[in-house]
Image 1 (tube, rainbow, N blue to C red):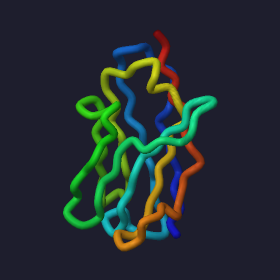
Image 2 (tube, one colour):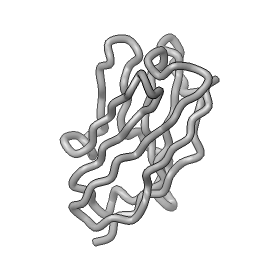
Image 3 (cartoon, one colour):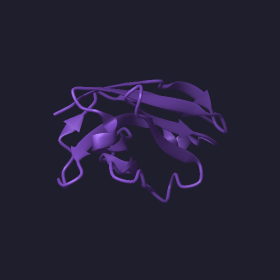
Image 4 (spheres, rainbow, N blue to C red):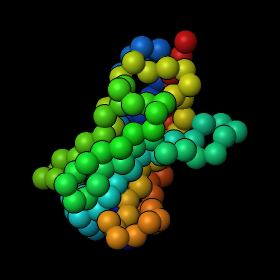
Length: 119
């Protein structure tokens, strides 16, 4: 497993931007498929975006497509989530997760960072 620590959450007005970071240790991010999930109060955890280890292709949930961008800095071993045009419904705890490319289940999770978008 890899250890993951998120940061960058906070309070922002609707229409604003935030960039979340997920620092990884124990494995290099380029060798893992990494993703962002979020969980709003009273709701189940939902997928936000992922980036594949091989090739670096990305995939987004429809709710964030065109507003959020997932990326990674292999030299710094950090995963990012740039969030633009934030909406109140984006309010949630955001988690980063990692898995080996050949494994279907994410087996490493961070502790989460709170994002609150005010209207």
